[in-house]
Length: 433
Image (cartoon, rainbow, N blue to C red; front, side, top):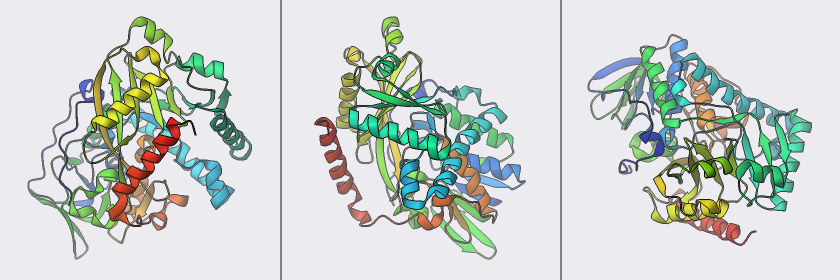
């Protein structure tokens, strides 16, 4: 069992969030239909789905709501996976790719429905679109070819090409040669979204217990008991929704070797001057780039928020933050003298096939996790799917099923291998390959 990490560094989201709800730790033995382990987007959306079905659920969160990825991510809402739909079709066939496409777009609609139904206005969600910015002609050609395939084979007309000049006008940067704009994407305040979901869960009469890590699952006649330091939950079913933090306690032992936790870092500057705010990201969309060590950026409350991969280990990394700042200034030289106000990081749950997974681990335990850094919408959707599995249903999840959620080979070597691969990618990006 890994030691619990130190509390995360102060983030822009924590500094500008609505007050947190108060959810005391579990201090007795209770009963429920379903015990949910993890109080992030997945677990909270699962709880809401169960409430709609008249099921009694209890949510167990090891730390506080929004402590993990649900409160630390970049707030990017998109209908995608790490592999492209064209790559999925090439390997698994067009019909599978179309089903995967439908699930991805359903995920955005699920998020929008949850926000609307539960009045989570504090999430500040806006469907502003996402622009994928190509850093060299080869990646632009590949991105445009993928867009044309999407239009032709998937009937997806929500994507369009932007020229070098249009991308420069959109971003205020000369670092890109063109890009592809996806209309069905947006941004939100991730911690406020998590806290809004938690409020909706308690409004439905479902108990949330913070500071209550699930330490062990114990099978009993007719059900399963989830043990915590202060009490236990006896339930028919358990949903594990711990993503990149699955290895924090022994309860995640059956799933932890199927995930590689990878740290992602984010910077937020001080508020920009009026001139800079007018020149940089004036359209206020979400932006990603095509380098191997992918960076993304957006404007939030007049600040540049710039994030990306590359921080290693279980805690924040000065080297990763420095690398991220250099990348930001390379892309936006005008920000060279702008101070950074907030720096934070969190764990992404990566999988062997770069896809999230949901389904049944056995007759008592279901799960949803492995979002590979693209989980704001998908986790909101798969929480409800996990609830359906827990109730004995068999949703069509195409490639996201439990059977495809394979252990990572040589799991004990994961950290040095990740460092080696990421270092090689950083080198290739640095030399323009």
